[in-house]
Length: 288
Image (cartoon, rainbow, N blue to C red; front, side):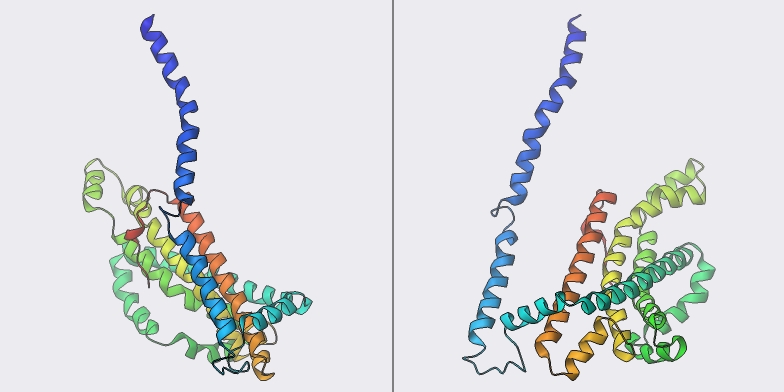
């Protein structure tokens, strides 16, 4: 009877003890002593913006060369209240996301084949390395000629420029699986697909997220570069129009929007990684 009572009271006490630990963890995450960047990041931003705002004129910096933050904010506010701006933003996002999806999908498939099939690696890797050495920006005029001035050429550009970071991380991730675990599963009769699913793929997940993180930023870059070469809409087209009109503050405003898009994409990828690959160590991923 005593043993039964101890067993029943033990689990019942656990839910009551969890909230204080969770609250303490939250306080530690928000404590500036534990995470000084919480204070340092906004402080550095404020210092740079204030110095830029109040020192530009005394230093004789012309507003047509480097507009002050207040002028950039005014230009940004004007763009955000303009309905045409949101159309340009929608086009660039559509180009970047579609290109990103294509580039990531092809890189996942090809990276898996290259890492698992030696014949595919020996056959395709020389061509991939040779194509990687070509500056991707130099391909933009060709894509415009081949696919036209519409969004197709920008999608292809975004796909190509986001393809290689993903490919490298997929290959390295699948090859970094623990050899002892693979050998143990082989001894117990596991097949190749079982080893891939149970060992190689979980090991490669942090590498895959590293490629996704880099690739989404590159996809936005590819879409904008494609719009530089030839487009009638998009944020890249809007940048060119601001340049032709000598609207430097407007150019900075568009750059701010592009930076915000990159940051949002980065944090979304990191959030997905924390949700889906919470076991992974961050120092095991690589960049491209």
